[in-house]
Each structure stands twice: as structure tokens, then as C-alpha cells.
Length: 314
Picture 1: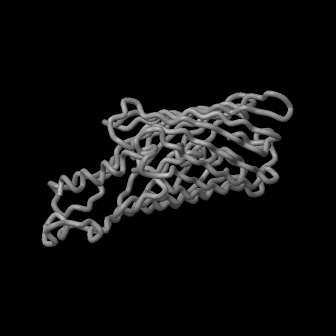
Picture 2 (picture 1 turned 30 degrees about the vertical axis):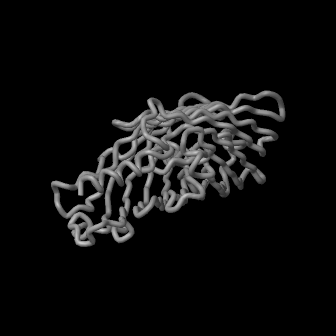
């Protein structure tokens, strides 16, 4: 049982930003997924829907769907948000709900610092009958739960201006165990604590063009640190064309992060946006799949008219 759970845990950990938390190439279009301090910072009822298909062309490849909505509370310094997500990889599925609270403090005239916390509830499910074994009566496969609810938590700090942001956050603070094994001594699989450092800036080139470089670093205990560097050209505050490079330090596991990412987004009237990204692998993974596709739809409903709300670069 220890071996089986370890294999599943490794499968969950090697892809993109660690498959325990599905990584999105367009993370900067939905920062509340990484940092709860972002909730309410757009000063609108803001939502994002994302579908991600990894390792296209491979059987049982990971797929992820996410719906996130967050909003500032009128006449207050608070923000609220929630996320529904579904993450599949092979016989394992992680479906859950996150609830987020954030508090925003003004720092001077044009800057704010926010603090956010998230309560997480995940349903972990393993379809043991999809795992082919020689002995169908093997107790490692016949005496385990197929599903379990797992609570956890996250917290983050987020500093932002109209053209700059920086954040630090920690996910899975409780490092909760999956609880699928009926033998307490064999319950090895768990969520691992993850730390994110993010930053970005929008640099004006002229009246029509802006350039927005951004960076993300993710650190998980006992795995290589992941670095994501991206630069996006913005035309007329409507057309976004970006190129990114993702790299895992000390790559040791075949299939871990080492890829180029192409990104496109278009904004309709600055309140509705669609995006697409494609990940092209630079490591041995490219011989076995045709890349990773990600589609995003976002919106801002009835935004509050303030000097920080229009346009929004982050």
C-alpha cells in the first residue's frame, strides 16, 4: 500500500506547478487562485472559468476545470471569494471548494496591501478498479476507501498598485492527509505545503503599447523549485500576446517543468475577456504528447468607478 500511494503522490507532484494544485499557465489572469489576498482587488464582481488539458494525446492525461468568483464588499475594505475546481489525473480525482476572505489596507494614495485567508475542502477519490493488478484479491487494493473529504487552509499577502504587484502566499498550511488507507500506519499520501512568490509590472511604451513582465516562483518541500517568467505585449489595453518560460531547478524527474508557454487574451469592452495558452515541452515529454492547452473566460460585473479600476493590468 505504501508503494501504491507513493506512486500516486509522485504522479500528482511532477507536472506544472505540482499537480496536487493544478498549475495554470495564465495564472496572472486569475491570481486569487494562488494568493487569497487578491480577492476583491479588482473592485468588481470578478469571475474566471478555466479548462486545462495537459499532455494532449496521452491516455488518462491530467485535465482541470476551475470556476473562481471574488468581489470587494461595497463601502468596506474587505473582499470575499470562492472557487470550485475539479482536477483529474489517471484514476485519481480532486474536487473541491475554496472560500476566501481578504482585508485591504490603503498605503498612501495609489497603493494597497491586502491580507487573505482561504478555507479549503477537497474530495479525494481514487478509482481502484482502474488500476490493473496481477492479484485481484490483493488487500492493498481491496481494503481502502475510494473517497474522502480533506480540509485545509491557505494564506497570502498581496501588495498592488495600478501598474505593479507583488505577493507571497502559502498553500496547504495543514498538510492534510488524504485518508484513503484504512490502515493508519499506511496513510502516507497528503497535501504538501507550497509557497508562492509572484510579481509583475506594466511598463508603458507609448499611448497604444504596454509591456507586462511577470514572474512566479513556487517552492514545495523535497521537490525542485519552479520558476515561471513571462512577458506580455499589450496593445490598446485589449490585445494581450505573451511568451513564457517555465523551469524546474535541479530537474530530476522525467516530465517535470521545462517548457515554453504562448499566451493570447482579448478583452471586450474591458469587462469581458477570453484567453488561450499553449505549453510546448522542451524536455523528453515532447516525444509522448502534443503539448498542453488552456482556455480561459473572465468577466467583471458592474465595476466600481475608481482611479484603480479601469484599465486593470492585473
